[in-house]
Image 1: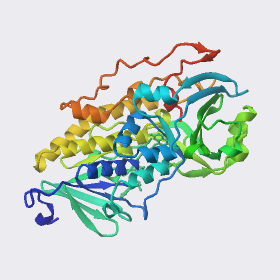
Image 2: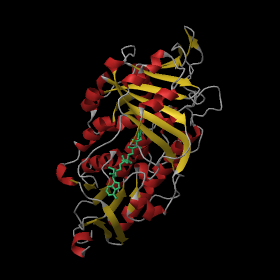
Image 3: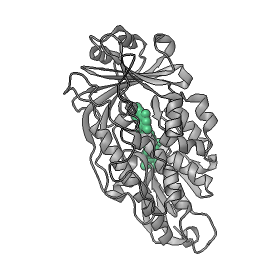
Image 4: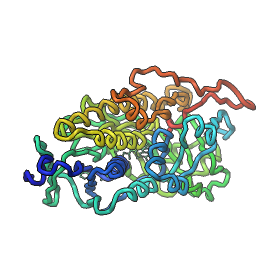
Amino acid sequence: MTSQQSSQNAAPNRPLRVAVVGGGIGGLTAAAALVARGIDAHVYERGADLREEGEGMHLGPNASRLLLRLGLGSALTASGVRPNALEVRAFHDGSVVARQEMGQSWEERFSAPYLTLRRQDLHSMLSSLVPPERIHTGAELAGFEENAEGVRLWFADGRQEWCDVLVGADGVHSRVRRSVAGADAAVYSGNSALRGLVATADMPHLDPSLMYLYAGPSGRVLLYPVSGGTHFTYVVVTEAPEGDAESWTSVTDVSDLDALLAGWSSEVRSLIPAAGQVRRWALYDREPLDRWSTARTTLLGDAAHPMLPHHGQGANQAIEDGVALAICLEGAAKGADGIAAALSRYEEARRPHTTRVQLGSRADKPSQEGKNMSNNVNANVNWILENDVQANLNNNSNNIDNWNNGNNNSNNSNNNSNSNNGVDNTIANNLVNVA
Ligand code: FAD
């Protein structure tokens, strides 16, 4: 890195230059939020093009409110679904045992919509917010070196870059995390998930304005609408011995699904002939980190806090990280000390909160200890859905994470106890802890 390139003092009025390594949901959100604030952000993605794997995802109001502010309202309306309710049904006969109303009432409750959508739809929306010349594909970070002047990056193809701030948004196997926080090991949860997409036309008994959860002795089946309701994503979580790699994309045979759902109602079993390609996802997380940042480098998303999917929050937390980081860097004082202070403010805002989400997701893992795997559907996640990281940072210069201290006033606030037409409504807010 030459001093001409790197020194803020050489060109005191130039915008901060931020290198975001990784063009997933977290990296693109960060880049979009940084660019929107006039920061010279660039994304370096190792893939030959920007692509997102996987089927569906839940977008909680904690993240959707941030994306609406980034201008994605019409795109989210076009491809997202706002489910009206979650129905918990008996695995053996499909009868409704509990129902959580969502839709408008949830939107009012949390001041932003709860959406389900394809992961790639969200990914393309986010990439549309980053000018193409700031997205560098085929750029696999091979190493970096930080000093008082900046950060020098080098890539597998030999190219070199520099920046004032390096953001590791490089996912669960993060190269940047290894340098910042040291090597760590994946922790197997004892669960794996079979998942895929099914056409709504192939399961005509499903209402595409609803989400469904069936919990039986061998697993939990969650079905939720995506792509404007033309398809459902299915996720079948079961106990399984460790064996698969820490991967989202291994393909398995539909006979696994058939065996798992033996004895389940025909309503659930109709998934089997319609299931298409079934992927197996061995569920790993990692221990929360003690630090995310150095003076000029930090982490976000799965690089910072790989978590189990039982709160449906991996991408949601990555989105919160991206916006929080942009707010902190926008407010950074000039020079190395200003950058270091901004990164430390960001980490203080995010690390305690994501640690709690990480550990909460782990605690909510389904197990066969009970009679069926519905044992965790009552976990209360209001404190996650209510979070507004942008308001917290803008309103509170000390940047307190309102939820740091464990208890909060929202616990049980939406637990309408008891029944409605014989249907238990006490599952308030459980739905993100099932996928
Ligand atoms: P990633 O999406 O992993 O992106 C990392 C990027 O970095 C990749 O593009 C990768 O190619 C790139 N990269 C890696 N190394 C390098 C390198 N050395 N140089 C350059 N680039 C590099 N979350 C939710 O919130 N709600 C859900 O409902 C939900 N459902 C899920 C369902 C499934 C099946 C899966 C698999 C995950 C789900 N998640 C969900 C989790 C969520 O998708 C992840 O937590 C989120 O995508 C993490 O985003 P990220 O940008 O941090 O990492």
